[in-house]
Length: 329
Image (cartoon, rainbow, N blue to C red):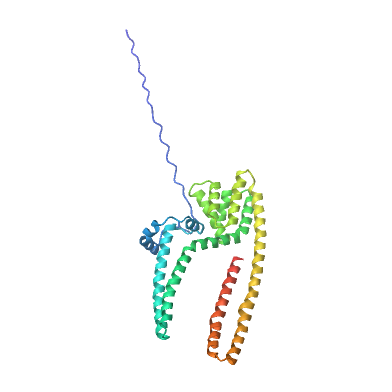
């Protein structure tokens, strides 16, 4: 008699899928909103109008680098389109101004040659100059940011060395430095971009520091960031490195301030000689020539040109130069 056999059935159950990780929240400072780097209406019109002309040309890596270092949130081709649009509008305005000025000079003085020269030279010369200025604005802004970073880097190093003395992690040091924009200015802006790469883009801190060194417009800040990476990868301690850099930048700032002070003193002496003494003697000599000479009308016109044009323009130039040196100091 055959015994019944029991058949065992094995049921394979699939493992439940792990739930997806929750989305990581990115917080902005209190009272601020996420910035949107879209184009405004004028930039959109410029891009639609000059898109083909810009794309037909090869890309300019130097312009792209300057825009990145200047923190101008616009692509290089879009910026070129805006430059073309602004130059076109300015050229039309200069052409109209030149025609009106030339007509006025031609009919008032009875000199059509002078009116033609004024009407042609004004748009022909100023329009290319304006294009060059607009084209070089990102580079100029990047250099201005570099000077601002160099001016405040010593106090920023004191802040970082104080935090490193409290054994704070390097990523937290850059994050805290990035929040102090009112105190440290562009240095805090550079630190905020490094923190953006780590918290928003998920890049590790050393790679973010390397990328921050490549896009920084300041050579001193680039050397500092590269030193941070070298010290961290070689197993060194960052606290002595921060203290050494703080002392180095403070000494360099004192020497730079002394050099600027000496330069401003030299410029003040040149101002007294070239703008005060020389025009005074020139006016006296020309007045004597007008009295004893026979061509008094021409000498009087020359005196008016010196008093009304030469002296004011010289003073404005020296004021601009002294203001530039004072703001950089």
